[in-house]
Image (cartoon, rainbow, N blue to C red; front, side, top):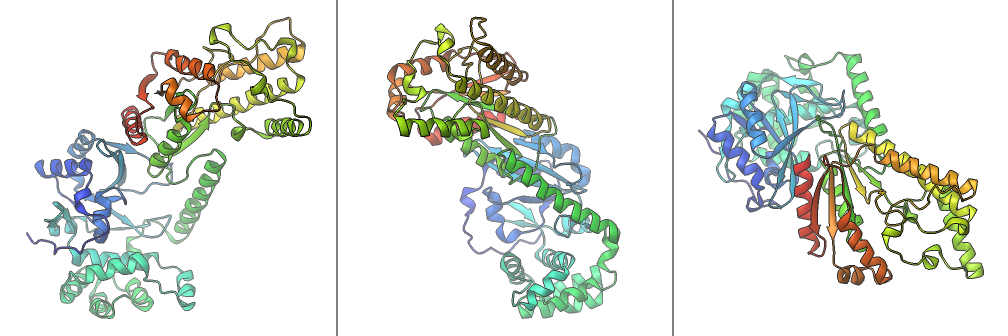
Length: 514
């Protein structure tokens, strides 16, 4: 068995390799499952620390034990939207509990590759890859033979070639550049030109074999070389998965679908880095806590962590100005203008702290008509958010909710503001009914996971000095007493700990719930 030459040091060193990947590869070796990391070995170190994807070609006959080992090794399967996946490829995401990092594993059972948004070719060389694989002794995993990897790298570039690339090169920008060029030259240092020529001659004909030594000597293939490769016998089009018009339809359909997805996720406040979803259905995670507990910061960090690999939607269960729709935004603007012109105190300044046991604030006849409109506008926003969240969860996405509407403590943190007493005017009662309906719809499907951030009154006061002390005391106690249905898992986290510890605990809880 030959051994890969030692690679030059990269930015990400092997010492930071994720334990979840090390465990997986050790189990593959122990059970004798044939695999190899088949492409992009130039930046393999970055893959092993979770910075880039891990692309592993596996013997298709080992699919049953492989699936078992992936589950044992803390990997979970994800899927892309219908029509966007590629034949012979499965997506798994692994979680490293020590660091909180995620790693995306592409499991390839066949060599499906090619054009952007399409991958419309399959090269039938899987057995050759697995029979010629080499052990990278430094990293302890099997990788592709560099001769074969270089041949396929150039073929992948030739397949991706489009008319626009000729125009771009005519403008002075070479087609082989950046990471593609770096990878070609990295492989060129690790091969014998005559070995590459012999392999290319065997796989794609004598004309192709004659091209590779010149490419290696020149430092990169030219566009003329790539065009010549596409015309050699057997032609690369013999390996296509689609006919000419079918190819165009699939490629454009995928590209337009991705654009539509990104626009829709922008509207839903969803990060757009990934479209992968859970095949078993989605997950709703709510973060609750008193003022100063760090709810919004934690939700933002969880969204950034997950969205690189998994489709995420963020929602807001509170009533802050930042989440206000058109109607509430206009009312906030008008109230602010009134305060500036007439010095009228804000609603929060007029409101006196009261224990949650007293129910909704005694606003009765003192409630203005404008305040009732504000409550109705908030109720409609909450209904829309609840509907969007349910749909996203049902489609397999992960919904992260900053705060959560609750009815256990009316008049307090994200609870009902109005009561339905018949003594109030009709417009007040109408607003109260609409508010109650919004809370009912929000509670139709309880969250799967609730992260309770607990902080002491002293910590909350230090973080939110503008909040009255009685309000902080009541808020801290209310979060402690919040209860949820039996099907909701509740995880208590000490929010006064350093944030990196809080975040790691939250990541572990979310991953366990997926």
